Structures are given as C-alpha cells and as structure tokens.
Length: 75
Image 1 (cartoon, rainbow, N blue to C red):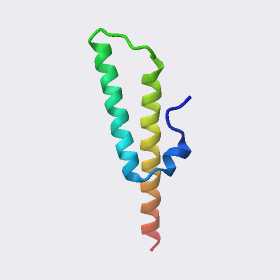
Image 2: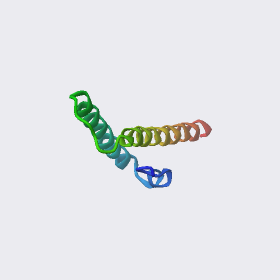
Image 3: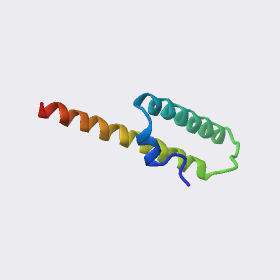
Image 4: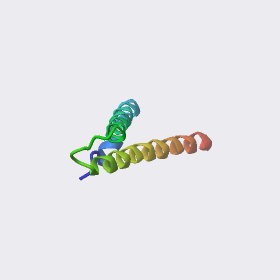
C-alpha cells in the first residue's frame, strides 16, 4: 500500500508537497544510514515505498511546472 496516493499529492499545495518531500527524503536517509551502520530495519519494503513516494511527488511537480509553462506560452 503506497504511503501517498497520487490523488492526495495532487490535492496538496506546492508548499505542502515540498515539506512532505523533505520529510520523506530525511526518513529515507535515516533508514539508509541505519543500515550502513550495521543495523536492521523491521520493514525492508519501507525503502521502496519511500523512493516511490518521492518519485510520485517529483513527477507531479514537474507535470504542473510544464503545464504552467505551456499556459504562459499561449498568452
């Protein structure tokens, strides 16, 4: 089950997306550091979920940026 659904991400404001992106990146970095230090995590699929959620947010941000660029070009 994904952490964030596409619909939820699209409903967020751009600022909320940036905050969520930073939170997810921080959590991913913390988990990776813990693994490198020799520790283990309970849910190994969490890394994959985090990476996919980060990619979803970035994809939607880029889609909206391109859409805004096309609108400016039409004017």
